[in-house]
Length: 280
Image 1 (cartoon, rainbow, N blue to C red):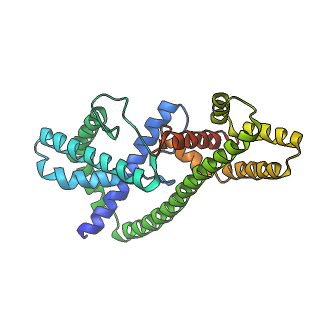
Image 2 (image 1 turned 30 degrees about the horizontal axis):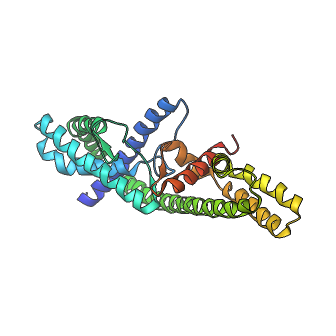
Image 3 (image 1 turned 90 degrees about the horizontal axis):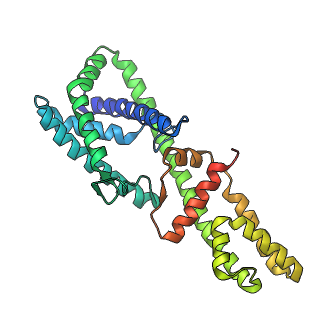
Protein backbone atom coordinates (compact mmCIF):
# COMPACT_ATOMS: atom_id res chain seq x y z
CA UNK A 1 0.00 0.00 0.00
CA UNK A 2 1.22 3.50 -0.85
CA UNK A 3 2.22 6.06 1.77
CA UNK A 4 -0.60 8.41 0.70
CA UNK A 5 -3.16 5.62 1.00
CA UNK A 6 -1.88 4.65 4.44
CA UNK A 7 -1.87 8.20 5.70
CA UNK A 8 -5.41 8.82 4.47
CA UNK A 9 -6.55 5.76 6.41
CA UNK A 10 -4.70 6.97 9.49
CA UNK A 11 -6.30 10.39 9.09
CA UNK A 12 -9.86 9.03 9.17
CA UNK A 13 -9.14 6.52 11.93
CA UNK A 14 -7.64 9.12 14.23
CA UNK A 15 -10.29 11.70 13.30
CA UNK A 16 -12.92 9.21 14.45
CA UNK A 17 -11.05 8.27 17.63
CA UNK A 18 -10.54 11.95 18.42
CA UNK A 19 -14.24 12.57 17.96
CA UNK A 20 -15.08 9.69 20.32
CA UNK A 21 -12.75 11.01 23.04
CA UNK A 22 -13.90 14.64 22.64
CA UNK A 23 -17.59 13.72 22.61
CA UNK A 24 -17.33 11.52 25.71
CA UNK A 25 -15.29 14.14 27.58
CA UNK A 26 -17.61 17.06 26.69
CA UNK A 27 -20.75 14.98 27.29
CA UNK A 28 -19.53 14.18 30.80
CA UNK A 29 -18.75 17.85 31.48
CA UNK A 30 -22.10 19.13 30.21
CA UNK A 31 -24.06 16.11 31.48
CA UNK A 32 -25.78 15.61 28.14
CA UNK A 33 -24.88 13.97 24.83
CA UNK A 34 -22.64 16.26 22.77
CA UNK A 35 -21.64 15.73 19.15
CA UNK A 36 -18.27 17.39 19.49
CA UNK A 37 -16.39 18.68 16.50
CA UNK A 38 -16.42 21.16 13.66
CA UNK A 39 -18.25 18.74 11.32
CA UNK A 40 -21.58 17.00 11.78
CA UNK A 41 -20.26 13.48 11.20
CA UNK A 42 -18.32 11.37 13.73
CA UNK A 43 -14.93 12.91 12.96
CA UNK A 44 -12.67 15.63 14.35
CA UNK A 45 -10.29 16.38 11.44
CA UNK A 46 -7.89 18.31 13.66
CA UNK A 47 -7.16 15.06 15.53
CA UNK A 48 -6.56 13.28 12.25
CA UNK A 49 -4.12 15.97 11.13
CA UNK A 50 -2.55 16.03 14.59
CA UNK A 51 -2.01 12.27 14.53
CA UNK A 52 -0.33 12.46 11.11
CA UNK A 53 1.96 15.22 12.34
CA UNK A 54 2.85 13.18 15.43
CA UNK A 55 3.50 10.05 13.38
CA UNK A 56 5.69 11.92 10.90
CA UNK A 57 7.45 14.04 13.49
CA UNK A 58 7.82 11.66 16.42
CA UNK A 59 8.03 8.14 14.99
CA UNK A 60 11.83 8.28 14.66
CA UNK A 61 12.06 9.16 18.39
CA UNK A 62 9.90 6.25 19.58
CA UNK A 63 12.80 4.75 21.53
CA UNK A 64 12.65 7.77 23.86
CA UNK A 65 9.33 8.59 25.52
CA UNK A 66 10.70 11.93 26.73
CA UNK A 67 11.63 12.96 23.18
CA UNK A 68 8.20 11.87 21.93
CA UNK A 69 6.49 13.77 24.75
CA UNK A 70 8.34 17.04 24.12
CA UNK A 71 8.19 16.94 20.31
CA UNK A 72 4.54 15.85 20.37
CA UNK A 73 3.66 18.59 22.82
CA UNK A 74 5.28 21.27 20.63
CA UNK A 75 3.88 19.99 17.32
CA UNK A 76 0.30 19.56 18.52
CA UNK A 77 0.30 22.94 20.29
CA UNK A 78 1.50 24.56 17.08
CA UNK A 79 -1.31 22.82 15.19
CA UNK A 80 -3.93 23.95 17.71
CA UNK A 81 -2.70 27.55 17.50
CA UNK A 82 -2.72 27.58 13.69
CA UNK A 83 -6.14 25.87 13.54
CA UNK A 84 -7.63 28.46 15.91
CA UNK A 85 -6.22 31.29 13.80
CA UNK A 86 -7.46 29.81 10.51
CA UNK A 87 -10.99 29.14 11.82
CA UNK A 88 -11.17 32.65 13.24
CA UNK A 89 -10.17 34.23 9.93
CA UNK A 90 -12.46 32.00 7.85
CA UNK A 91 -15.60 32.22 9.99
CA UNK A 92 -15.01 35.39 12.06
CA UNK A 93 -15.51 33.49 15.31
CA UNK A 94 -13.37 32.26 18.21
CA UNK A 95 -14.14 28.57 18.62
CA UNK A 96 -12.25 28.14 21.91
CA UNK A 97 -10.57 30.52 24.30
CA UNK A 98 -8.04 29.58 26.98
CA UNK A 99 -7.57 33.15 28.21
CA UNK A 100 -8.66 32.11 31.72
CA UNK A 101 -6.11 29.27 31.82
CA UNK A 102 -2.64 29.76 33.22
CA UNK A 103 0.26 29.91 30.77
CA UNK A 104 -1.79 30.50 27.64
CA UNK A 105 -0.74 32.12 24.36
CA UNK A 106 -3.37 34.55 23.03
CA UNK A 107 -6.06 32.24 24.39
CA UNK A 108 -5.37 29.78 21.57
CA UNK A 109 -3.20 27.27 23.43
CA UNK A 110 -2.48 26.65 27.09
CA UNK A 111 0.02 24.62 29.10
CA UNK A 112 -2.60 22.21 30.48
CA UNK A 113 -3.84 21.14 27.04
CA UNK A 114 -0.32 21.06 25.60
CA UNK A 115 0.77 18.74 28.41
CA UNK A 116 -2.19 16.46 27.75
CA UNK A 117 -1.29 16.41 24.04
CA UNK A 118 2.25 15.43 25.01
CA UNK A 119 0.99 12.39 26.93
CA UNK A 120 -1.38 11.54 24.08
CA UNK A 121 1.56 11.65 21.67
CA UNK A 122 3.42 9.10 23.78
CA UNK A 123 0.36 6.85 23.88
CA UNK A 124 -0.13 7.08 20.10
CA UNK A 125 3.51 6.42 19.16
CA UNK A 126 4.30 3.77 21.74
CA UNK A 127 1.05 1.83 21.87
CA UNK A 128 -1.88 2.85 19.67
CA UNK A 129 -0.26 3.32 16.27
CA UNK A 130 1.65 0.00 16.26
CA UNK A 131 -1.66 -1.69 17.15
CA UNK A 132 -3.50 0.08 14.30
CA UNK A 133 -0.78 -0.85 11.80
CA UNK A 134 -1.02 -4.52 12.76
CA UNK A 135 -4.82 -4.54 12.45
CA UNK A 136 -4.83 -2.77 9.07
CA UNK A 137 -2.32 -5.31 7.70
CA UNK A 138 -4.84 -8.03 8.49
CA UNK A 139 -7.76 -6.37 6.66
CA UNK A 140 -8.88 -6.80 3.06
CA UNK A 141 -7.40 -4.06 0.85
CA UNK A 142 -10.53 -3.78 -1.33
CA UNK A 143 -12.69 -3.18 1.74
CA UNK A 144 -10.30 -0.49 2.95
CA UNK A 145 -10.32 1.22 -0.46
CA UNK A 146 -14.12 1.30 -0.52
CA UNK A 147 -14.19 2.64 3.05
CA UNK A 148 -11.70 5.36 2.13
CA UNK A 149 -13.65 6.50 -0.93
CA UNK A 150 -16.93 6.65 1.00
CA UNK A 151 -15.26 8.46 3.90
CA UNK A 152 -13.76 11.10 1.58
CA UNK A 153 -17.11 11.71 -0.16
CA UNK A 154 -18.93 11.95 3.18
CA UNK A 155 -16.40 14.43 4.59
CA UNK A 156 -16.55 16.65 1.50
CA UNK A 157 -20.36 16.77 1.70
CA UNK A 158 -20.17 17.47 5.43
CA UNK A 159 -17.66 20.27 4.88
CA UNK A 160 -19.93 21.94 2.33
CA UNK A 161 -22.98 21.70 4.61
CA UNK A 162 -21.07 23.04 7.62
CA UNK A 163 -19.48 25.89 5.64
CA UNK A 164 -22.91 26.99 4.37
CA UNK A 165 -24.33 26.86 7.91
CA UNK A 166 -21.50 29.01 9.23
CA UNK A 167 -21.91 31.46 6.37
CA UNK A 168 -25.62 31.76 7.19
CA UNK A 169 -24.67 32.37 10.84
CA UNK A 170 -22.53 35.33 9.76
CA UNK A 171 -25.48 36.62 7.73
CA UNK A 172 -27.73 36.31 10.80
CA UNK A 173 -25.34 38.38 12.90
CA UNK A 174 -25.12 41.01 10.14
CA UNK A 175 -28.92 41.06 9.92
CA UNK A 176 -29.29 41.54 13.69
CA UNK A 177 -26.79 44.40 13.56
CA UNK A 178 -28.87 46.12 10.87
CA UNK A 179 -32.07 45.50 12.86
CA UNK A 180 -30.60 47.05 16.01
CA UNK A 181 -29.40 50.10 14.06
CA UNK A 182 -32.90 50.56 12.58
CA UNK A 183 -34.51 50.31 16.03
CA UNK A 184 -32.14 52.92 17.40
CA UNK A 185 -33.25 55.32 14.66
CA UNK A 186 -36.93 54.58 15.33
CA UNK A 187 -36.47 54.97 19.08
CA UNK A 188 -34.93 58.41 18.62
CA UNK A 189 -38.36 59.59 17.40
CA UNK A 190 -40.35 58.24 20.35
CA UNK A 191 -37.86 58.20 23.24
CA UNK A 192 -39.63 55.46 25.21
CA UNK A 193 -36.64 55.13 27.53
CA UNK A 194 -33.56 57.01 28.56
CA UNK A 195 -30.59 56.17 26.34
CA UNK A 196 -28.90 53.87 28.86
CA UNK A 197 -32.16 52.06 29.68
CA UNK A 198 -32.94 51.67 25.98
CA UNK A 199 -29.54 50.11 25.31
CA UNK A 200 -29.92 47.79 28.30
CA UNK A 201 -33.33 46.59 27.11
CA UNK A 202 -32.07 46.32 23.55
CA UNK A 203 -29.20 44.12 24.67
CA UNK A 204 -31.51 41.93 26.74
CA UNK A 205 -34.28 41.44 24.19
CA UNK A 206 -34.37 43.28 20.83
CA UNK A 207 -37.66 41.51 19.96
CA UNK A 208 -39.40 42.93 23.03
CA UNK A 209 -38.13 46.44 22.22
CA UNK A 210 -39.40 46.09 18.65
CA UNK A 211 -42.87 45.21 19.97
CA UNK A 212 -42.84 48.24 22.32
CA UNK A 213 -41.85 50.49 19.43
CA UNK A 214 -44.65 49.09 17.30
CA UNK A 215 -47.22 49.88 20.01
CA UNK A 216 -45.84 53.41 20.35
CA UNK A 217 -45.91 54.01 16.59
CA UNK A 218 -49.54 52.81 16.36
CA UNK A 219 -50.56 55.42 18.95
CA UNK A 220 -49.01 58.14 16.79
CA UNK A 221 -50.54 56.69 13.62
CA UNK A 222 -47.15 56.60 11.88
CA UNK A 223 -47.78 54.00 9.16
CA UNK A 224 -44.26 54.19 7.70
CA UNK A 225 -42.67 53.30 11.02
CA UNK A 226 -45.26 50.57 11.64
CA UNK A 227 -44.35 49.01 8.28
CA UNK A 228 -40.68 49.27 9.15
CA UNK A 229 -41.25 47.53 12.48
CA UNK A 230 -43.31 44.81 10.75
CA UNK A 231 -40.33 44.29 8.47
CA UNK A 232 -38.03 44.10 11.51
CA UNK A 233 -40.26 41.47 13.14
CA UNK A 234 -40.22 39.39 9.96
CA UNK A 235 -36.43 39.57 10.01
CA UNK A 236 -36.46 38.34 13.62
CA UNK A 237 -38.54 35.34 12.52
CA UNK A 238 -36.02 34.65 9.76
CA UNK A 239 -33.17 34.69 12.29
CA UNK A 240 -34.70 31.67 14.04
CA UNK A 241 -34.98 29.48 10.96
CA UNK A 242 -32.78 26.52 9.96
CA UNK A 243 -30.97 26.40 13.28
CA UNK A 244 -30.31 22.66 13.67
CA UNK A 245 -26.63 22.76 12.66
CA UNK A 246 -26.11 26.04 14.48
CA UNK A 247 -27.45 24.61 17.73
CA UNK A 248 -25.20 21.58 17.36
CA UNK A 249 -22.15 23.79 16.89
CA UNK A 250 -23.07 25.97 19.86
CA UNK A 251 -23.53 22.89 22.03
CA UNK A 252 -20.21 21.51 20.82
CA UNK A 253 -18.43 24.83 21.35
CA UNK A 254 -20.33 26.59 24.17
CA UNK A 255 -17.63 29.27 24.54
CA UNK A 256 -17.72 30.26 20.87
CA UNK A 257 -17.80 34.03 20.36
CA UNK A 258 -17.39 36.56 17.62
CA UNK A 259 -13.88 37.60 16.65
CA UNK A 260 -15.12 41.12 15.85
CA UNK A 261 -15.97 44.10 18.05
CA UNK A 262 -17.72 43.91 21.44
CA UNK A 263 -20.90 45.13 19.76
CA UNK A 264 -20.75 42.36 17.17
CA UNK A 265 -19.99 39.75 19.84
CA UNK A 266 -23.04 40.93 21.83
CA UNK A 267 -25.17 40.32 18.73
CA UNK A 268 -23.45 36.99 18.18
CA UNK A 269 -24.20 35.91 21.76
CA UNK A 270 -27.85 36.92 21.38
CA UNK A 271 -28.15 34.86 18.17
CA UNK A 272 -26.44 31.95 19.92
CA UNK A 273 -28.82 32.10 22.88
CA UNK A 274 -31.85 32.41 20.62
CA UNK A 275 -30.91 29.45 18.42
CA UNK A 276 -29.99 27.21 21.36
CA UNK A 277 -33.30 27.90 23.09
CA UNK A 278 -35.43 27.31 20.00
CA UNK A 279 -37.78 24.33 20.31
CA UNK A 280 -36.41 23.50 23.76
